[in-house]
Image (cartoon, rainbow, N blue to C red; front, side):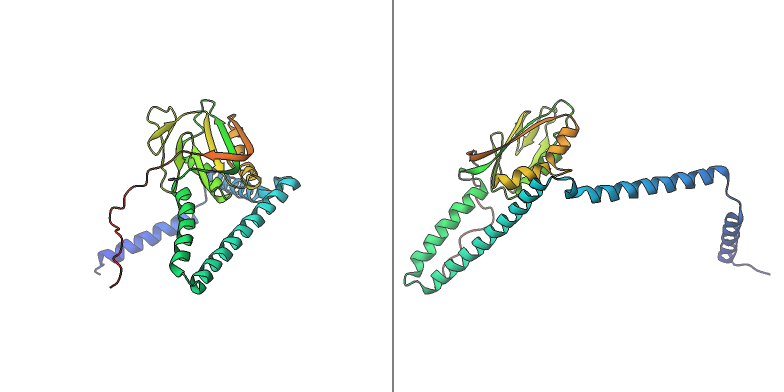
Length: 252
């Protein structure tokens, strides 16, 4: 009888599989299975406890402040939408549409200049001072997380040291571990962050379990968050000229 090589290989593989399944597991195999089960159970339990903690660990006053902050942010967005609708209506009904369009454009330019970092800004906000105790807890990734938390909490202008933070700002650990290079400028401990926005929203946001302040305090770093009625963000950026875009020519 002639056997095809593929048939022989498949037959041998199935025979080895049957032998392996039917074989009684050894002591080490049983021990490994038990350890894997315990490890999986511990991971699931820890994940469940972490997800259940969340906001439940906050005090009632902190929860109320967070809720008020969310409500105020929603109100600001609704007010901005209403303002845009008014501007649109004014442009449609104004007898001097060009003058109204210019006024609206100047107002938007002032807002965009602050967002782009080309104009100074001041208003209510917070200052955050972080003193790294030498364990290098404050890394480039940590600083990025801090900026993101502030932005999520409604920060409209942020400055770290003498560097203005904008959408394109980069954070890189200094090669000599002397600090963090923020857009190429090395900022060392103590790190001073100034943020303009609603302090009643930003300050609790940094203290949420798993947030900036608890993470720093867990590693023994000193952090101070101060709410202020007036914060000055005066570091400026030079707007880079567009590389590809150019003004469109008016239609003839």
